[in-house]
Image (tube, rainbow, N blue to C red; front, side, top):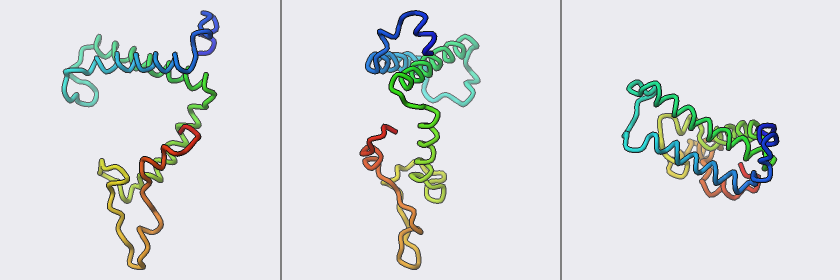
Length: 136
């Protein structure tokens, strides 16, 4: 992505703000594909090949802007994604969350016989994760 932008002299336009706004615009285009379709089954069995190809193009636009934005911001997106998965594993323990769409703040944490709360596993509220300064 960096080389692609450099060859076209687009670095001058690729500020974090501009890239974010472009990403949001592409998300809008992606959303339009699903607008008014209701729920769509996995695999999109009723979609025409042209519709799936268009979807792939819009998904790619979103991905490419996201990759470029992370590069410009100095964020290793691969590392950040892996770290986020680790944090989510703590935030949404299988024992408490399997089969549930509830937020961690809505999960009832059962008490153990010894009076401790679920063996030391606690649900993290959404506000806890937003107070971090590392951006993940």
